[in-house]
Length: 431
Image (tube, rainbow, N blue to C red; front, side, top):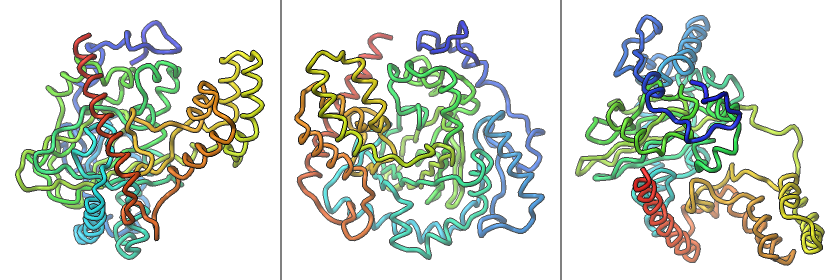
């Protein structure tokens, strides 16, 4: 679907539910997926158990499967289900590590932020990949040797991809998430997304692949993730997913896939999806969420942007005081400061004032607006860098209490939840 009037910069006003529905309501043709064992609610489903312990050596079959998964993710429904992708015994051993980390978080009394649900409603383990590698290397190896996961990643991104993982537990009675698209552009507000040209909207979902590995049996009553197949094809989706009519359409047409321990789902980050409502009284639905990034999202040179900011800021501050217009100063900030909030440590640098924490450029612009002395910005940059630092090891954030920061984060999370509720109420009133 192409933005109206061939607009270089799409607008939320162009979102068209009828055009969206025409894309979403197309059927999934089983004939297009000969390697699938069946089509489940429009989702090609594969027996991945033969690949769970690593490559089988059948390169021809692997190549064919990779091509078929690519076709399903790009031109098909945008989602595939790989049954038995990771051996259940490997999953269970990894789960025990995750539960220990969650117990440590509870002992500290901290809250884990959530991009699309109320903070503190569920349990989260950020940077689970690194924490698992440090805590139990054997478990890490047995879990990640799966060739089913590797084939899915290569189908979307090619080789040399970069993996991150975050554990999500929807506790008994836990409410469903709001339907959404994912990182990158899914983390932007509508106002921010409108500042990006249409080609960036097209590019964003090609930079990452979303996945989830079931760490328990998930009947529909436990609230497994809800999906809207084919919704990734709507080019204005990053501006549409918050609109009430699209949220209602999602509620009426989404599918929900029951899973068993070790099953994996992979899908386009542009697909509308949301964790479901856990209606049980005793099942803590646990999944490991995989976000896999393209090797190509990197600059060619390593640049010390903190050093640049500290060097440029005193002169830039003086120039602004002498009459340099603020818009020109913002261009200078863009040239030297890190403008993106990610990657970061989502335990220290939580998404509490929106969907993303402040970037280095946000901090530098704030310093200019509030006329900070250079030393204040230097201290702010040091704190910003500390929040971004991985915290796995002897000073692990999950294992060493910092009560002042935990209390501060809890207050910020609660304020953010109230602000989010107010914003949604305002959007509903306007609709």
